[in-house]
Amino acid sequence: MVDASADCQLADGTPKIHVLEPGKENWDVIRDVAHSGVQEEAFYVLDVGDIIRKHKEWKLKMPRVAPFYAVKCNDNRTVLETLASLGASFDCASKSEIAKVLDLGVETDRIIFANPAKQVSHIRYASSVNVQAMTFDNESELYKVKEHHPTAKMVLRIRCDAKRVQCPLGIKFGAFPKDAPRLVALAAKLGVDLVGISFHVGSGCDEPEVFERCIVIGRQIFDLAARDYGINMTLLDLGGGYPGNRGSSINSIAAIVNSSLDRHFPEGCGVDIIAEPGRYYVASAFTLATRIHGRRQLTNDDEDADGPRTPANTSYFYYINDGVYGSFNCMLYDHAVVTPLLLEPRPGPDFSCNIWGPTCDGLDRIATNAQLPLMDVGDWLIFEDMGAYTLAAAGCFNGFPVPKVYPVVQPHTWFFLKERAPYTESHFVMGSPSPLPAADLLPKISCAMEMYNNSSSNNNNNGTHLLMPSSVCSSSIDTEDPSTSDAVSTSSDGDVSDNYGDSADFLADLLEVTSVM
Image (spheres, helix red, strand yellow):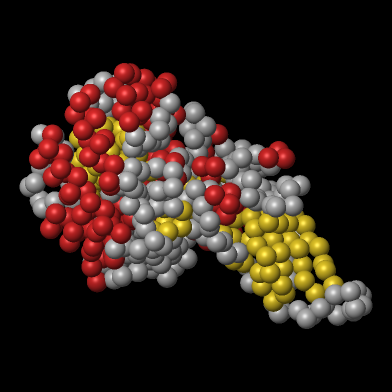
């Protein structure tokens, strides 16, 4: 595929963010790209506004808990730049992840090196760039850090597993609470700066009550360290586990966390509270579009292959251009369950079908006995909620490329982002993604105000800022009080209204949230 022009990329090859025309939604963008006639490879649409809305949601529902985004979940540069612009901090697991975050201009005190078993070279690198906070869960790690980064601020990771969780992590990391006294004693003996306690209940947690158990255990270890060793710790890290799919909610977790913190770590106690959300921020922001490039018909042995095809006697294999070695590795490593959606409606009854990825591996299967109408080669299947643990682990086995990402924003989101570092106006391009020859250039940013003012029927009297039509509503910041709604809606196909008629209202709301970061 040939992109629209060189103007769609920054000098380092990072895709620019496309500022959509008023009223255009994410599924409209997918249709535009898919129906362009030159797009054959799978691709993503990244709704940047969805990430911003999630950040506002977090700050409103858990105001005392500072988010340190888990870079391992999705290290897409646009994701990292957006979170950096909002003042979020970062949970890094390696030298490479630390370097990516520092490259954005993020201060080192906004990074925690949250890997309890670190390579020596990575510890030395953290020391060289002045990243201080890091986790441990065993004696050898304390000795290692003491030797190679003696000024590090150490955070003891304690095991506290959720009973209902998508990916349990306690089997690999986290000291048992009964081992905490021994590790605290060793830290005191070595003179290591022990500053706090961390937990990780597991990725994709479905048991909000586990956070209460974590906080109670944390309080006990804080008291032990102060009473027996004179160590007054100042950091409690609640780890990850927060849901991020469409329709999910953090309300139940937030209610338990806020209540438990008020009891055990009340405001003014001198302890900073952080967490490490990953999928929460990115799962619903990414939508994957895949193309069917092969179809195989299977007919029951006792039926006439040339006879009428009915769901009773016929099933199908469909082959698409992304699979478990690419984006759908989440099915193997993240235990994800994916649902194929039709880009365009198809008539007729549903048939049983298997959906296969493009590689030669017989394990490269995405769906078994799915029910779909009869599809043709060239049709597109769409997968929502594909932002978490997909691209970060995708490879190019058999030579199949990792899907390209098209970042998009609504106009009022652009007004906010372009003024916040590391973003500048050069990071954006006007118009939808368009896989056209380079000669067909997209409008320049210098034409943006005229372009949008002409399309808006609600300009204000003095013309100092743009009034956006009410149809612009895709997953931008909600005005609804989160406390009155249990479900977090992140739909991008027109079923949510953010009720921002005036971009100044939108900016005022956003600035109120980000000013407390």
